[in-house]
Image (cartoon, rainbow, N blue to C red; front, side, top):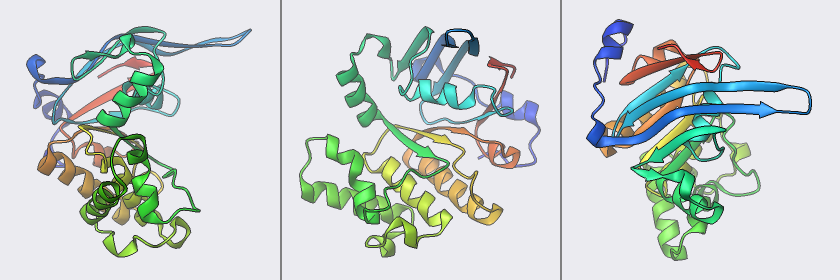
Length: 243
């Protein structure tokens, strides 16, 4: 883990890309949103390699393309131009059904607003990604319990999201993201709705997942202190990578 006081230049130079070990590869990514009257360039010629086991932060002002870039990495959106490779698989060659299966197996998602279903108990929320796999109910339940244990919420399995604090909701969201044992976690402002103490707890969980399990993590954040705890920091400005 990089100490918080490490200078940004050292932070940037401390993690050398190993091209034989690349987990996410973006080549010349461009994203254009078009309406009848307006064309907006959201991402402009982004090329980025992220190593297996790396923890990368993405920062930049609001509207600079951070979430758009994360959605393209997560195969939730397609680039207008460019190539997206995940674990050496060219995802542009996958149809919608294969893309969904690939995403479910390889990727876990954490969102700022949690996206929990209030009518489902915590355990059932965590289990949701496994419903799209050929696993038994017993196996789904066991994996969900283990995921909740990892985030310290095994005593809240029968609660509903409305009975939880913001930090607890985000822990449930992390458990849901990791229940399928993905190799990659994409986190969009995971501490954005939390106070500093709870945000630090959530960040510690992500760091443990990265260090203990070797999970590759890409995190969009506005928090410089959180970003400095990760291996590498990429900055965007007006859809262009500036650092």
